[in-house]
Length: 292
Image (cartoon, rainbow, N blue to C red; front, side, top):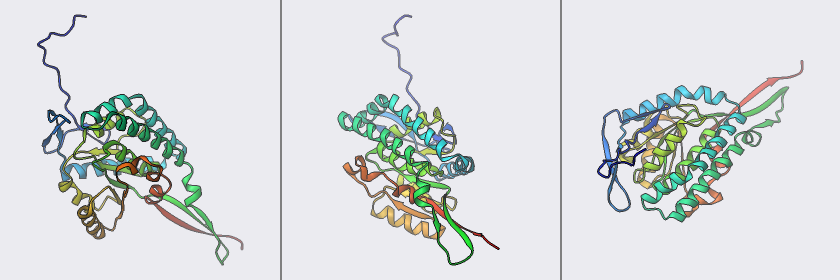
């Protein structure tokens, strides 16, 4: 094969968001420019709208029942397989983080922690029920027990930093318990999330379980807060955004939780565990009569 011509113009990539198992542009065809750490133009990223968010919620709602019916063991297998895929392509993800200003050592460490975090929640997928569910003593002739159920569609608003580790840390516990996700990627560094979407598309995760949008937080956060079919929101947010999310969520009666980690805390064990799983399940109590 002959080498490429020195004057050849390379074919540049057209980034797209991942919704319903497909790669789509914004429904408005809007984009915003993203530059690398040197200030050079990198790509036009889809600027998603409220309509894109609504479309993503529909896709997540459609995928929800099938994902919730999967056995916890099967969900654990799928999360583990996703961790394998990220491990295999970690070099590409590290390069994308470095291109946008991360130190190579920090990017490599964050990628390793992200893979380990997926493994962590894969391990929890078939174990959290034993800790959150219970058999309850009652003063009547009934067998009373409590089990967990996924909430449904959860909105995830990722931090700007760390853009990939933060997103993975918030996605994993939500889907491990059978929920589906509509996620808003980092506004400042969205490209690693786009690469993650490409990996999700070739993983065992069913289309629609995770949907990744890019765009401006000021446009999309209010819709995350008020959308009636989002049953919960998990957000890395500042004070003003927290206020808007709480007020909007009160009108639509949804659960709101905040990722309170910052900086190096995202890399620590405190940013994982049973807590984020418990925040996005509901408890169902059943009374079963016994005796005569």
